[in-house]
Length: 337
Image 1 (spheres, rainbow, N blue to C red):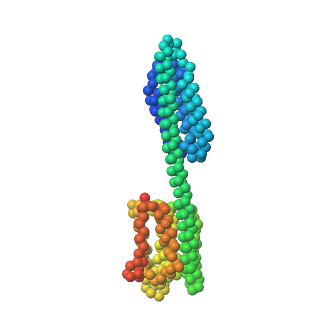
Image 2: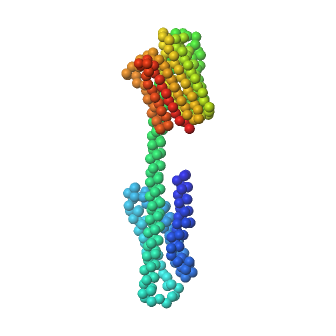
Image 3: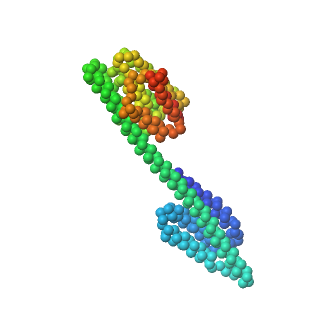
């Protein structure tokens, strides 16, 4: 739509400004009086020439190797131009010598060819520019579709990863015949509903995402004993701030996966702050379980790739160990606006 509007503006600019200025290079006012038929025919010919080139899309035909059609169009325009050169004109019966008549005919021929070359050059330049513009847009659309497909893949990988860990939590509660099992299943059903409703959404409001994370933390708390202490803090100055769904849950999930213990005291700290369109996420947990080499952090890496596609150059994600590998920290700074 935008490209079509720009094309209309350029056509109007050429027809109402450029071409009239070019025509003014010749004594068109005298031609209208003394050679009116030729003058009006010439003006009609110039506008026709321009729009034939614009509508035939010669650069596109060249890319499609339709050389025969290109030669046919250009040949037809040259033929019409030759007819314009031999346009019958007796100069209103003026008595001219052979030399003067020959000079006027030569000037007439050069004028028509000049107009032909100017209009041809301008229209082909415009068409070539638009064809390059169309190719750029096409490449951008292809890249956008590719990114969209990659995002869908990463999101599809995150959901099963999240469900697997959550089901492990429920399985543990069932095995221990905990009285918290019913409450855990209710929270789990709410989480599943959230995932189902927002599975195709590109963004959601930040408050909904925070509530979702809070439900997940509550669900994990049901299976933990007093040895694991959870600190969760969140604050936002704009609850309607938009964020991709499930972009933070992977980091929260990672903290619970490796930072909990039923035998040793440990602490998981999670802070989510959003101010002036900038989101700051921090998590910190003691490493109570060692990650196996065969169990890579798929979730965090997928999340990083997802951020690179959605917010290129607008985020920083830092993960590192502290205290000789006994504590793991994640810090994400994301510019949402």
